Image (cartoon, rainbow, N blue to C red; front, top):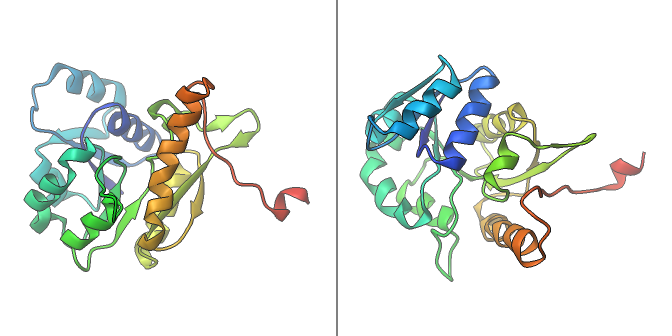
Length: 207
């Protein structure tokens, strides 16, 4: 699968390298194609990684993942709206929402009819490339459209080593976005540290 990642920072870079390692083609959409850090990321990622402008990346890939500062999301989505039509959109950002709505819900309003999902926002960037804790794998909680795109997102989560945990359509987005605040409170407020992820236990775990 060809995955476009808008942003090549710690979150976008970690996801991109993990998906390349899983056999996907990844293109990073960035404003500065000559950026030194981008060149290092491409070298580390391997031959299945490339870079292009955000517009080119959105137009030429099947799944588009946003890994940019939350404050830039609405403007960026508006700029790329035409190229994003018909794609599967994953929002991995935090901080794009309002007191009334989660950021990913606002994005969905900008892209009517486009399947939009929230995922990869609830752990530190280091966990995205190392979700295995001893014999246990971390869960990745996500929400969004229940159609065919859900299976794609489920597979992409599983491909980088997480257990996919679907929590419902975008009405569940505020809960998923709050996981990032819980993670930060535990990692920093309770001094647990960044090597921290979530796992759900059910009756199946007792068997």
